[in-house]
Amino acid sequence: MATPVAARAALVALLLLAAASAVLARGSQLGRQAPGEDPPEFVHTNSVSTDSLSYDPFDWFYGFPIPYNPEGGKKVKSTVCGDAPDAFYKLPELLPMQTKTLTVSVKAPASLGAARLLIFVDGGCTVFNGSAEVNQATLPYVVVPDGIKYPVIVRAPFAVDYWYYPPVDPPVPVRNGTFSADLSFLNLGTAPSDPGVKVAVYYSEDAIKDINLTECTHLGQVGVDLPKIAPGKTKTVTVTGLKAPDADWARLFTVIDASCTLKEKPSPLGWFWYYTAGQAGALLGGTTNKGQYTFSVKTTPKKPKVNSTMTVKVKIINLGDVDGPVGRVDVFASQTFGDTLLEFGGYYGGSRCNTTGSISSLKTSDLVIKAGKSKTVKIADVPAPGQAGWWSISVVPDAACANPADGLSPGMVAPYSTVEVVA
Image 1 (tube, one colour):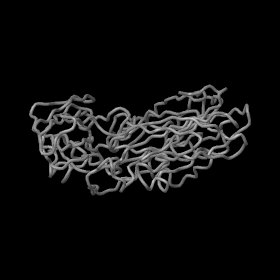
Image 2 (spheres, helix red, strand yellow):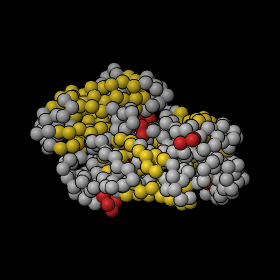
Image 3 (cartoon, one colour):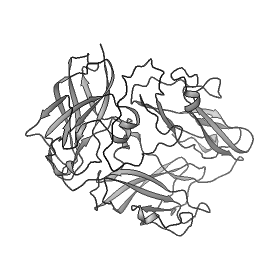
Image 4 (cartoon, helix red, strand yellow):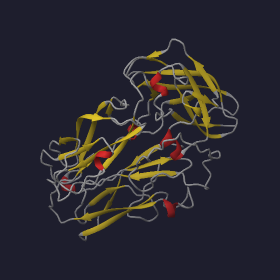
């Protein structure tokens, strides 16, 4: 993935999501919205048609260039889509809530100094007639003289399938309990970093309120030293001794180069969200599809007919620390897409332990999932929606909350995927 230093290439990954209804974080690093304290109000949209131009179907963001500052006149790898640009790339077909990543290349300017890369998704406005207004973004960078050597350390972005469950242990920390996190760091520069670059880690929102994060004297509630990282390479460190707050959601904060060994000031504060469990015990959720935001929820037939029946298969995982029953499994169909699905997971009516509006239910009596393991559950004879178009199918495992932790963890998302219902 990393290009040789001699090539002086810069790499930028562009992730595109066919959101089917709503706009997320366009042209920027994708980030979770701060969850609210109240249950979300799910937004229903009209039936999604691939021929519709009444909404913007894209959610997208771009990554970092590697190296961070390319040399003048040399190749720059990036991701661009548009008419008559320095590089033109055709997007693959994107189904609703499907994600694809593109990596492309253009040439950096010959002149030194500040430069920018324009990224234009749907450059011909063939999918959405408003793309010129909402689907362009610029990536600033600096063109440097030949032979400049420098390290740039950033926290490596999580893979898409870590969106709901980042690499923390346990996967859903118990409130007021301890946990660890596997944090990966990437060198965007052209020279290796020296071992010992310090990262300050904060697990409490209150701990960062009165700290001047531009100073070089804070070491975090937990501090870690990074190993040597070669250009274009990633190293992962396990951070222990973290504590989850008494909240449904929480953030873990990092400050890279906290003691200013690489630059005059530390890197800006970074963070990611994670869910918490109300108590220890069995905690049921879904497994995400590799490289996707969606979960392992499939229908047979793949394209059910209007008002027919279908079989829904869902892969359920026990994210808790003890074995637990699957209990009642409820299935829901809605035309909820975009940022509503991304932020809150699959739609269900009512409350977590008293759902309403399901299209089918399966009561299991002796089906138990061991801690840390998963099982595929099949729900047969599920009524297909009565209108053709794209639908989101969501599943609530243990809908009656036989496992107490399920009822005390309202931040947990219901697994979901999308299906096209045909006439």
